[in-house]
Length: 286
Image (spheres, rainbow, N blue to C red):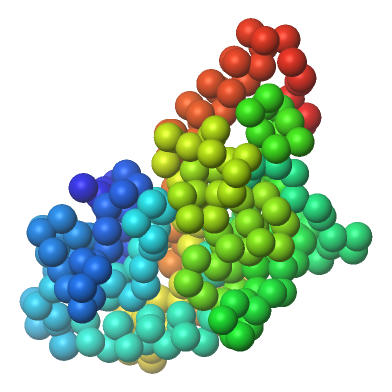
């Protein structure tokens, strides 16, 4: 159903990051936010290690803090104690969580004349990002995005597919899908709801949208008691195999999670490139 990858399975005390894959698995059942037999919520107690006995406020089952659409794959955060759930939920509400998605678009989105230079907190370097500030249901909705790669395809709009990274700064329903389709006229490949006419010939592979990078403040190790405990941990467990890092100013213990995008992304692009070579049409743009 979904995977708790080995490098995401380190002991993170009261929270955990899991990899929802393959796409198509629901996080909750549609009705009343329940936990049907084939949902991520139902599976969590069977794959996540509970906190150490004696920990205060242990939940009967881990609680997911946010959602991913059914056709979207990637990272989800779960809390294991009441205090962790409250802390993590507040971080999402206050927009303190850094999330990055990778998608394949049908076409070439128009870039800003003056892109924003921002530090990539996951990779540590500065990159140029484009901005979409477009309300959805009369609520502010903001997305930063950048083109990673373009691949020629005679099936695609204007003859190209674009691989992009996107950082949503708000969490509106279908925000990334609607922003790219409605403001850039470059829908995510495989989108059944916002794909539009030209994207129909690219359907059949599922939605090409993956949440593959995430940074969240640790809900326990940033308390007075938790930070003292973390400082005393031996070096071989203190960093949880690279998942725990200090913020740039050293004040905050952060959870850094990253995964490779789903195999279907690379296999799909290889198939498109092979079709182009066979037909003799176009070359990879970059």
